[in-house]
Image 1: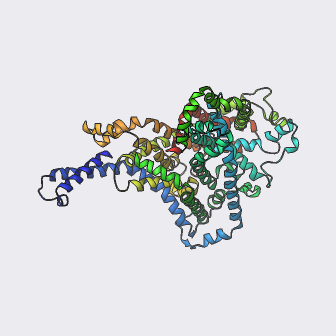
Image 2: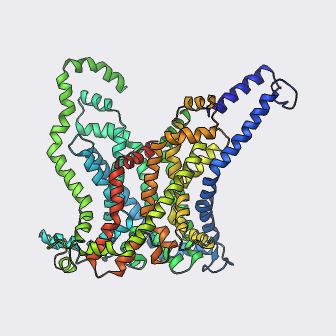
Length: 341
Length: 298
């Protein structure tokens, strides 16, 4: 970077000294060999850029951007996956989605999970981070253990919980051993309960990630602020409310963004614990589950792709609104920091 | 403002130095028993299900049926030894290792190259390139999965481990670029200038200086890529068809439905399948946690 900056400065000085000489590159001015070398250098640089960034960009375009574009294309067809799509139906698939009660259901579930995840996990993670930020023995061990559910794959979490939560499972057994048998329930199959069970599992699985982020945010707050507040006689809760929470803002906003995007594409856990068919009955089906059921399982690739596009648009709109109104300050800071470096 | 008030108060605070130290230690002594208790509860809630899976593998099915939440009595190891002796487990284990290693290698090599360009070259499309990969964070795999499956099938990679590896590399690039670019920017210009004066080309600088200097970032990215690949479920679910090609997550699910009446065996298989990720995490725990927090801050 400094290299090109240097040459730019040199060329700037040159054009200042001999006005318009820089434009006439072909003229036999004494600067011309150097200009040629510079041109050769630029060509070399272009080659290097192409060589270094080409593979990654081609991969990314071919396997990330292109599939999404392809989904948009398939979304305009009625297509069952054999041969190229031919039956153009325009926006019919999208009209069907708007009228499809099953899609309304899965959308409702998805947004319920999205909202409740924020409401439940956010305060809980902040509280846990405040707790673990104190100087206690074994703090690092606690942090590691809280992160364990996040490291384990969704399949294992799903398989494990689906063995623990049935009516004759370990949770009900534990409750009755503790004399709380009346609290036992059919956690997975009861349609009134299943989505709350799912929410509980999601919280269990992802809270560690939120806590680790919040802890990092807490540690980036300078100690002097707490000391100053303590000297001014602020109580522990006053300090948390007036100093910690506002300064934790950027971390909370980024966590919330990641959580929203994660909720919108929730698939693995539901697919493994309930499976695509039972999820519909138990009331835990999500948009991604429905997309999979329509596309791969039922073979309605056109309709499934249209659902994928709707999911993508929802994610995009949420992301844009979020960036526009919530993240703007944080990102601006990040960008300016980046250019300063 | 707070700085000035703090400044004006400091002499007084230093006058009563013990008082100040007492303030700092106050929440510690005050909160201790409660803090420990709540922390222990939290850890219990986080770890108990995992422990249940591991211990459940040491029981028999009749033990599990009669007392779902009990301890093994007596301890049985046959579930674990059965799984460890099965070629199915080891075949899927090998597939998972291969896919994870190849994906990680691809993500790191391609990601490092493109991050180097974004971080240290000056050209017009630099910002656009960064935004392209940053936007990639908003393209989750699940949304693209159906067309991706069709593309992979067209390429003849259906039911082939390469059909999982290649898309995984592509989807791993955004996180990698976002973590590595600040790392590469932070390499002082003086080093690059010194290398240039010594006659090293920029590519030479990349191979001789950048790769060793960015090693901590590379390690972080590798760990994230490896665990991401190890745990990936959707992509193998769509691409891999035959049991012989399954990765462990698919294997766990197939095993669970195949042996749905043999809960103890499923628990044993499940805990053996999560063990590698847990060991990996235990070894690299500092890097993983540090990498995640660094990614958010950077």
